[in-house]
Image (cartoon, rainbow, N blue to C red; front, side, top):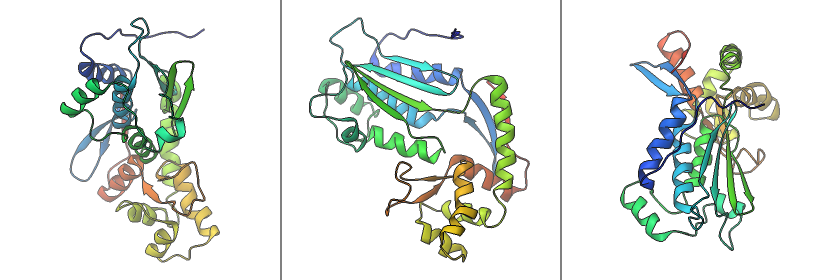
Length: 266
């Protein structure tokens, strides 16, 4: 039986709902401190920027024809699910939407959100969210169209308190292990920007072959320190590799000589 530990009903002007939903999500997330070369930075255990994009997207593109059908945001132990009424407009598919194709359902509402600075450019919300999730070392989000509903699932680390602490400890052990060989040099290389595999290995003076990929790059990806720009197509010719937030934090920690990340529950 699923136990609900927190819930909120949000009403009022739609633009105000963005911050209210994000406050609800942050209230149920973990907050950790990452120590860089200069100062401490507090980082949430959920991907704030992409979730905000997805909340804005749901508010702007939902159907409000049925006033009794709300937008739902659920925070589970390992996922955050956003469900909005209305489904996709005729001619749109999940694949086209993820590629940046946009058809505005509510033009007046979209204009208001744009004038308030909540929307930067039409059609960029979901692609930006996908890239941000990849950069954070998280799995690709799932987008499902049901009967008059659109469901987006964002996978996050386990927020069950006991399992979360265990996973966090294991993650740090793995992080230090995968830096053997050329791991730290690769992190430094991709910290400057997304690189192809040949650019990665040429930059650190290592022959670019499959063995080098398995020994040096793949462990960083599996540990969540490096992400692929096209995670659904690992062998794509346009594939690039970039550092994740976790990788950047670890690199800063190594450079500063400080201990690893501390963690706490907000």
